[in-house]
Image (cartoon, rainbow, N blue to C red):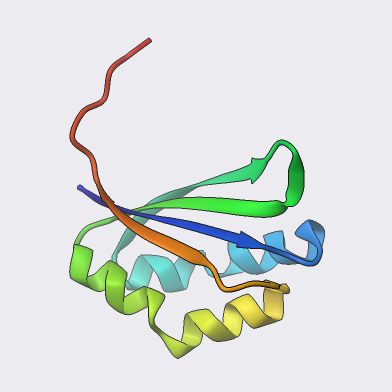
Length: 94
């Protein structure tokens, strides 16, 4: 299963979060199977989203879309996001 990991800084987390939540249907329509949201414990303005995708190429296309750029702008993303495409190779329970 392919994943995408996005890291970006936001001006205000309370403003960013509702836009991220509203964008769930757009992500789903583009092949996202779900997402996990994280914040940097030392910098609450730094957000991480781990997205599971049904297809790596769809994930790549989505990250290049004008729709995503517009949503990030509305949400107050203040930097160029770091985006990584990942392949799960192993999960080990604690």
